[in-house]
Length: 433
Image 1 (cartoon, helix red, strand yellow):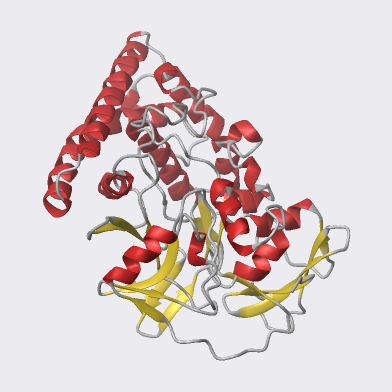
Image 2 (cartoon, helix red, strand yellow):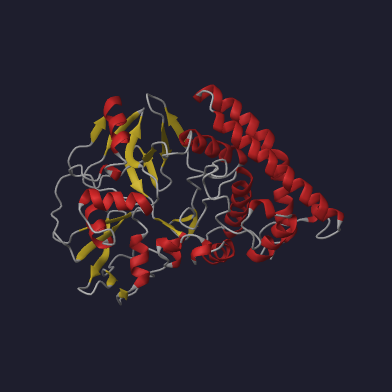
């Protein structure tokens, strides 16, 4: 059935209606809000008011819930839906989405959910094996899940080593990721890089490797909260949604937000802007040192709290620059430069100016990271290899970190010799413009 209207729910509560006109124009209107205070907006791009929103901004908020790239093509072929038909994909898939949004047809009866389906080891292995043919297992009866991204993944409920499919829009807690095709030891790559990020002090999604005949990465969702009362979806949106940008504009070079724009948004809306700016700076430094070249504004998100949003924990970190066939540029330019081998201390100083913090603070943070991360990477590797077994990719990541750290320290020494932005000991943090 082709739907032209979908009810939009936020954290289980109906908050509005999404419509598509015969000409393909999208509109969204909030439902009346008798509650005091009224529920939060579904996105900062669509603040609450009585009038309907129309056009590209509406489409962007919802289209960013869907997969992208080759996985989207395979998904539409599997479901028999046109590749460009975002609305039909949302109607079919958007029961359990990133954040706390959920969409369903207005006339859909509030039927009891089918019981979850626990997967034994063989079923889990088979599920991972058929994802390239049936992304998100979308053809399975009652399975309505969607996640953005360009690589195969499967949202599940996971506890005590047991993966469970949640049917009819039941909330999931984890994301299972099989190996990325053609990218050696990608599961171990992301698991190790994420563990290193946590040791470095970044708030980051917890990852673990599920060992079996085929290794699978299990990622704890940062948009879910679990306790004795059950699982709750946490309102969250990526920075494409925040800015009302299409998923095709996720990279800065494609018209997406750059780090200076993200920093300005954090200053304007964050409940703790100084802390979030510090985290953004540390994340940018870490991405450079480990060679994460796929960073874009769909991989940075705001998680909405009761009063104001905060920068969400980071997710999807891995070293892309260790693979010769992948793009060797940085996802976000730093100080106007996205070529790692061209990065100098001057570029990092300019980055500080662009995001509105004292440049010397950025340089001091960079120098501290370059001095400490190689040793930290070795310590994390020792623990990681004992738990997960030897993986050659970890050695390659460490070698890249060592090389980038030496590059940084040499460049800072040269900058220091010129007497610019000194003394470093007087650096102030992100609260200083």
